[in-house]
Picture (spheres, rainbow, N blue to C red):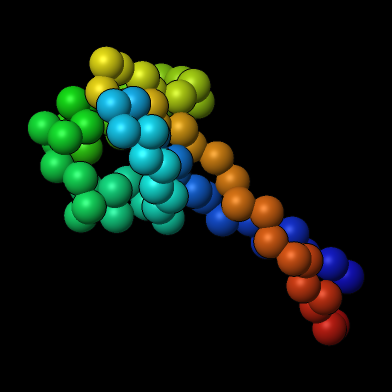
Length: 77
């Protein structure tokens, strides 16, 4: 029996520099960037994603939410 092993990934693109960073959680994003650097507070981003799965974009950045594909694990029963 195989189990899919997917992890959430958050991709932050800073428009001014073209910098791309990848994170495992919104909390991790805000340990690297401040709300001022991103132009959105953490709770506001979470509220946005409760309404839609679309990427968040403003004049400063684009923040995308997706899944990281991993190798499947075989489960022994």
